[in-house]
Length: 532
Image 1: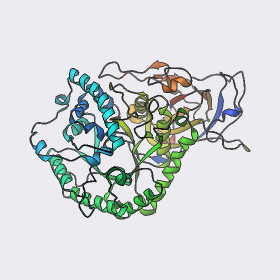
Image 2: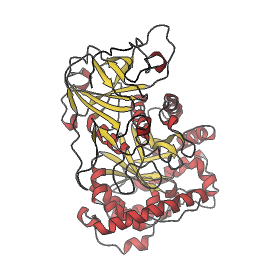
Image 3: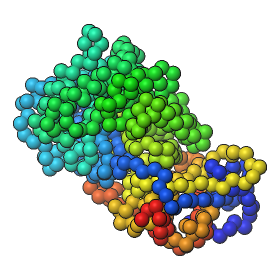
Image 4: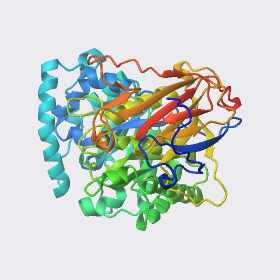
């Protein structure tokens, strides 16, 4: 992983944002060189310990029997490994679900983790039926016809058994003739959950900017804010939920009238919420190509959206925290053959790095399980590449963001950014010593890259965790399997994850980053003052 200086071409370009392939060699063995500069003396940002969180899409409740897949020992093992985390239950179908009190009053038994465990034969049957169910759900999405269900016991039990903090999305499309939110059904659900002592935070509605398209209902931002104030008052009357979290408005990435909706919401409702949530996807899943998934320009577009949202939020509600309340690669259920493949990892890791650097507290990944192609597990509940990437992030990356930059030679124009890096304190909860730092790096190009280290990092031993496709070259970007340090990642059995070992590298003045790779480099002896 740490190679001697290439004997072929010498690429003497040090860039502010990454490698310009046109200035590097043209042979397969040639590499591009990037000089790094770091500041280990201060923390730039600090994010929530549950920064990387996940969602369960409300599509799983379209037929209640599929909620029993949450009893799968395999799924529970995978989810628990991602804690601490928020578990958001929401999506388009949350605004077409109602709670049936009579049905739940008939259930007096509890849901312990052991009781919740799904029998093997039933799990196999449900997984086969779920493949057919997803086709039906896609048809409903196109026709915008949704059935109404709630299945709260299985959901809360899953969250408790996996040590995740549940955020439950309430239906905001239950409205009066005056277009005010009708809270009666939510009151029944909250009362039921309180009787069961369920630990839950709440949301109200999903992407209110699309209500007119989905349901022929138009809700202004100011009215939406008043609806949240109503919900907060209901929660404050509860002994269990009077201080619970409330998040919203879960608007699509702001542009045009969505900005007005967001500002109107914050004007009337900001005092009711604990964080402002919005959604982000890079591209349209029905039109996306492989080139989009490895395009620096596409990845850079997130930074512009974050800046717009933070500006709008701080204008109306200075100090309000902002979350990506739902996020993945491509909207419309994902890009088939890409959103669940190795290629999606570049969007995911860059989103995590950039969001933390720019000041977002939490990023909720759509989706752990649910309809679409951007999930973290496949139809057999086996982990996909973005799951393994998420797991490594959880184990290696701490909440403290540090500064890392690339040096730019005078006279060079801003190049295409094929190498991207982010720096955090290492995760001390996983046994790393104080002062250790983790460098996240990705190479969007086929050629390898050489990262020249500053004097502050070069004396340190390094643990290298390099993710690559199990298949070579560009074809490997479509693969749904991933290797860690050239070893294929897969579960040992349904309840056992493999040991994720890094390669120990001696101190040196540079690192090698293979083409089309994602990497975590932990500098165990960096002695960063900011991470003490």
